[in-house]
Image (tube, rainbow, N blue to C red; front, top):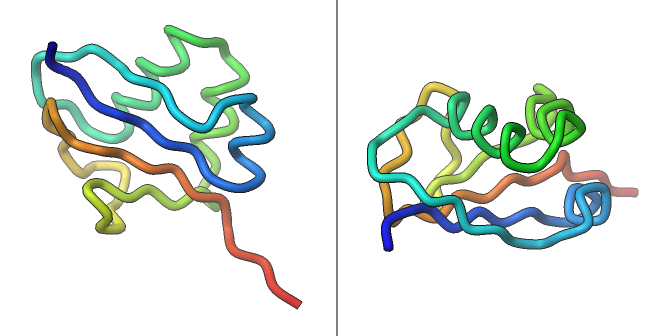
Length: 85
């Protein structure tokens, strides 16, 4: 089965109600397109949560921008901004 594993961390995981999902796909797409596909599959609230400019995206454990190409078999992680105190 071709697709990508998508992980959500920290407050984003709590907001979306899951820590991981699997999205079937057979072709390479940008992170921006991936977010749209997730929103189409889940709900519009996901689009808003994942499109925020504060959210970092990593593909195969490397931070990338929204135009980065995601290939089937990749692991994508969405990370909220780190806060400290």
